[in-house]
Amino acid sequence: MNLPAQLDHPSFATAVGTIAGYLLILSVMTTLIFLVPYALFFLL
Image 1 (cartoon, rainbow, N blue to C red):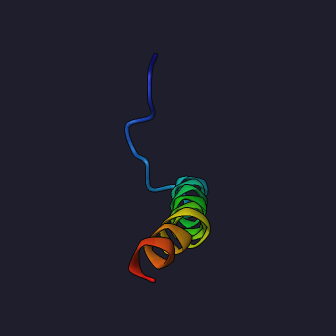
Image 2 (cartoon, rainbow, N blue to C red; image 1 turned 180 degrees about the horizontal axis):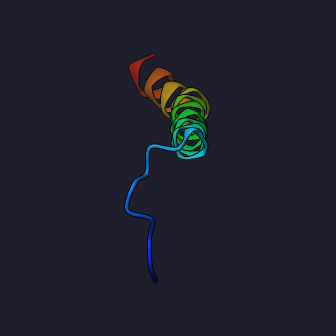
């Protein structure tokens, strides 16, 4: 697979930003949905 030599096109920055944003949202939602109730159950 031949990758382009320069990855400074705005579309690459958009793709990386989109993936990073989705991973951030997914990690926050996972924490809120699973870890917070788990912690509250064992702390109370």
